[in-house]
Amino acid sequence: MPLPKYLRTIVAFAFLLSTSITASSQTIIDQYDSTYTAGISARTLSGYSFYQTFTAGITGNLSRIDIGFFNYISGTGTIEVYENAGVNGNLLYSGQETLLCPSGGCMLQFPVSCNLVAGNTYTFHFTPGAGIPDPFGVQADFSNSYPGGELFLIDPSGTYPFNMDAVFATYMDSKLTGIDKPELNHNSFYTISASSIIMNENVNGELYALDGRKLKMEGLRSGIYLLRATSLGKEYLFKVCIR
Image (cartoon, rainbow, N blue to C red):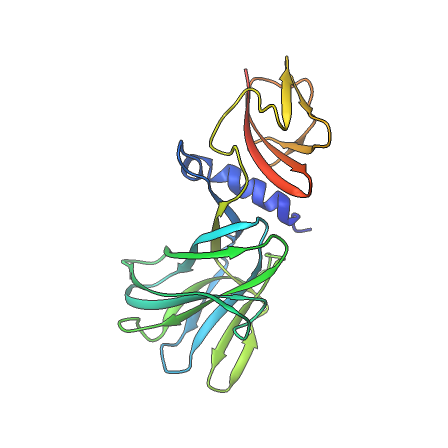
């Protein structure tokens, strides 16, 4: 059974802890599919492109999308982000990037900037440009394991679902607070007493180990944990240090 979206976010966040948390960063990996089972050949001819739908797990600014490719690429490509599933919704972002994949197995980065709302459906759409080989290879997950969306092909005859997913990741500049501060005590949300975390009044919380396991909040060993707190309908993510 696929993991719930919120737990996928926690697991992915923990996996990329070394690169996603810095002293000045609040960029969080949100949605992703890292299951690379096979590839698909995409065309650069006029009218050909592909898109992946996804469901935002975090409210904030979408700042980057990574897409997997598996052959040599040196050229340009256009990335677009739309509201809802497909390319007929409100266009939130459009930009052209210079791309280089010197060999197979590249996760190419596309910087973007647009606001997303947790739980809503969105689409990123890739159109190949000058210099992209025909055909070019897109990494795909044939097991269709990502529950929040699907990969689609556009060609001159129409739009077709693949019943699979692209290998991708989305990154959010989240409105969640506290993520870059391993604090012992965050008074507005929780307190730490000995080896236990105590949520403040009107705040609910869930605690996770860095490998994604959900934990009880008492009797904790020394270490760093991820605390997801909800207060007044808003969600917050904290890195908590137990000494």
